Image (cartoon, rainbow, N blue to C red; front, top):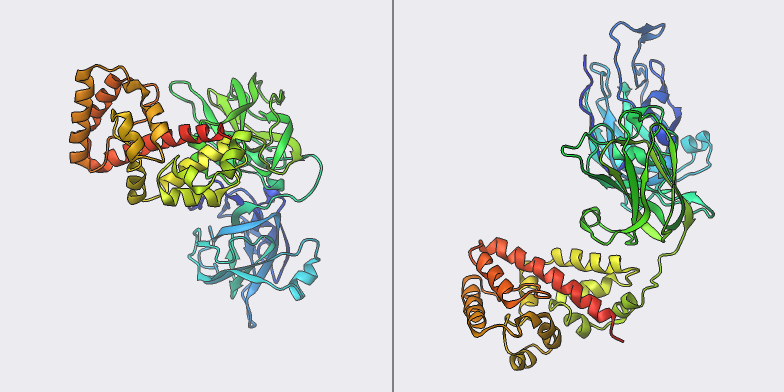
Length: 501
């Protein structure tokens, strides 16, 4: 009998896992199989010939057949306090003896005795009663307050039976302590949010608090063809200043990376996809040579503060753990240019990008604490607008090659900037300018909006070539291409706004 496929939630940790310190405290009954099995990190196993003096040996928690009313239950202390996003009540190998129904409850009761949890502590329903399939993963989304954090859960089964594993997937809560901590450690709220590859073992392992017991307990990528660079992005439990970096290749002997480097970014609550695409990462520790099965101290060149770290390995391979020891810090802006944008009114932001909804969203997102935060948020907010918002912004741009008088008259918000951005048109010959004018007319007739390009550094002939390349695009694709050009223009204008008193 083979184990069924189990659920996986990359970027979320199993808060109940033994790896994080999760432990069952108390249960109504575990006659056939001990409650301690519920939180084992490894998938359940099955030996068809193994028996104990009480019956079949099962890898899970199993109560006896109930002959009195009421459900069975087990209380588990989470290894790390955190939010609960999803649950997997895994009944692997429990076929004729699985519970037909189960629910999950949670409470916040650090330091309480197991007896008080059983008899006195109020519990909140996290996963309402759900039917369970035999020999399967049974996944449910948590329904409790998304912002609530919990220290304990209670699995209730109706009326009795066996559960192989309880997985409580969520996000660890930030540590409220003081002094130096491992800022990326899961026990302090750190977690992996994205990686280039995790073929052999999960990215979530990199921030676990204990040293890896074997090679499969780290983060390992497949062999790259051709050799390149793999990476993993870690969210710090709290924004902090990094004093010491340790990269551990424990157990990786013939498959450790040749080198590694660490980058940082200060963008609290950044969406993972935006971090993957961002070009605003700064070096924290430059490329260092790695050895097999060793702990490496990396030289910290820029301590931050940072909200996220990116470990890059060259070309590929496995790293067991990354430790980033440092002090938590309050994210505050120290960049005068960003502060000027934070203080800008709506009219000045409209001169940057002529979408009213974008301006409103930017003002709501302030204060920005770094240039990376500013530019990243500006782009991410733009891509979450609708087509009508994009067209509104396009309407605040003049046509490429329009004369200066027209710019000043028709586009009061953006005239000066547009004239500077289109300086590549100055000095162009009459034939090129005439072709640009005709091309713009043809483009607008086809698509319904002006030809938009980030003109900085481009000559008139280069812009004409781009126009001719794009005019045959499908309208839906061209709209997004034009929106991408607006992103580039917006970044330049935000930088310019930051230089003005």
